Image (cartoon, rainbow, N blue to C red; front, side, top):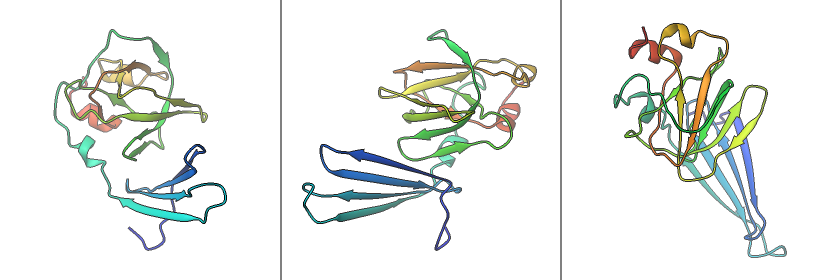
Length: 173
């Protein structure tokens, strides 16, 4: 990473009850930086803690578990574009050309999704220990449609993320 990297996204969370403010910067290579400002009360002196985290993208990109496509009978579907997915360990998946493609293996890595950002800046916070998101399509022609059908299922562990090219490679016909 550069000595002075420019973050692609910054989030700030304030825990007023415990007087903690957490700022997280996310970078293009998948790494992220967490800085916490904390006090023992409103009149206490400022204290800081900082931690850097390495790129974790390959954990998902290298997964070979399960089928190329998984359809789900749970929950309801909604035709939206996903622009990025933010995991609790800090990974950001972002696409610049079309929607990010997401599919699942219920026996795979199981990282927790914390936020999902949709096209147009709409954010969905996810409650619970884990979420499964399935791209509901069975062929290349399905993926090429303007609207992609995405399923949201709460409470099911297991997640694998692929970009469009990866899905084609992994068996779309």
